[in-house]
Amino acid sequence: MISVDGRNVIVDGVNHPIPPLPVPATVKVWAVPTEYRESGVFIAVTPDGEPEEYPACANPQFMGEVRVEADPAAALAVEKQRRIKEVKQKAAELIENLNWRVERANERGLLGLPGETVKEVLLKREAIRRASDRAERQIAAVGTQEELRSVAFEVTEVDYPR
Image (cartoon, rainbow, N blue to C red):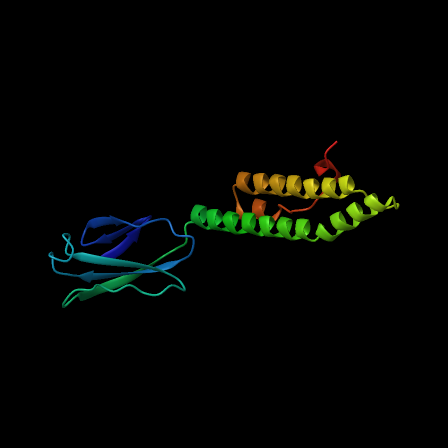
């Protein structure tokens, strides 16, 4: 008999904990020789979209399978990591896109021509870094998917050094 109780797969009355997963998964159970697994049970937890794992022993006996749902906290943690990576990439792109303006401001400054100064461009870069840091802190602090969706990476006046 195979069942799921929270984060445990129960096989013939014995609890086998499974890790919190960010996506739903299929749990398949095989009876295997005790030389292969001391418990005599091989449990494969396969998150949706991942390749399946099978026992690498002679004569495994398939016992059955159950579905486990995604763990909301694990799913949120994965989404937070994805969003932080996205913010970092966007900030790096915005900073990189200002390189030509630093060069132009430097050259104009050397020539004594009017225009944006190197300091002004560098202040914009710093504002991007501060906005990125702020967004990352906000993402880390949220407790729900809904709160996470409300966090936006945008450079505002508060991000500029004074």
